[in-house]
Amino acid sequence: MLLILMAACATATPTAAVSTPTVVRTLLSVPAETPTQIPTETPSRSPTVFLGTQSEGLQTYNGQGFSFQYPANARLENVTIRPPVTDEVHIIGSRVSVKPGDADWVYVGPGYEMIVRTYSNPEGLDAESWARNYVLTSWQEAKKRDEPRGSFPISEEGEIDEGQVGSSVVAGQPAFWVNYLAFDSYIRVFYLANNHQVVELSFSDYPLANQPLNLVQEDVYALIMGTFRFEGK
Image (cartoon, rainbow, N blue to C red; front, top):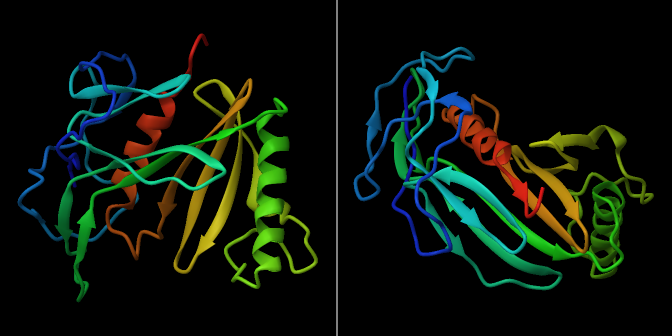
């Protein structure tokens, strides 16, 4: 299944399309205004794709102290923020309609969506220290307000589930990942720290049986995260 899930660019701070030597899966363009029915076939962990060097079709988003590349047809959406978030942008793919194999249901919605948030890091903590403190503090505040806490990777005793967090590297930068439970999916979150700022990259990860675009979404998220750069690094 060969797809491109890109929507019309919104106004943000992108620059002109740039080249990158990164080899990624090629995705076919889908007009944003007309949902496209993708041919039905049984999802597979090894779909038919073309591999090539992406030299066109990418834009660069310049945030406050960082940048990343994204599909040129993606729609960028800034949303109203609430503390402690200092900025937030959503990278949203085009609207598609997909009926997987012999399923009796159809997925209709954005081809993908990644959220990029920024936070203040006044103490200059590393990604892991900041993320652990943030997750635990958020859980404690939710508990005080008697709000649902099932999405947090934390036990009722206030202990972080070490199986749902860990250290990693994003585009050469030290990062710390956290899995939040979201009903039938996980929200995969990666935290990166640089001086007095933390950047959060997050996306929903559905099982292939529930989201026929899972494999394509993985490619797009890998592209964005693989091109993330802090200013001066």
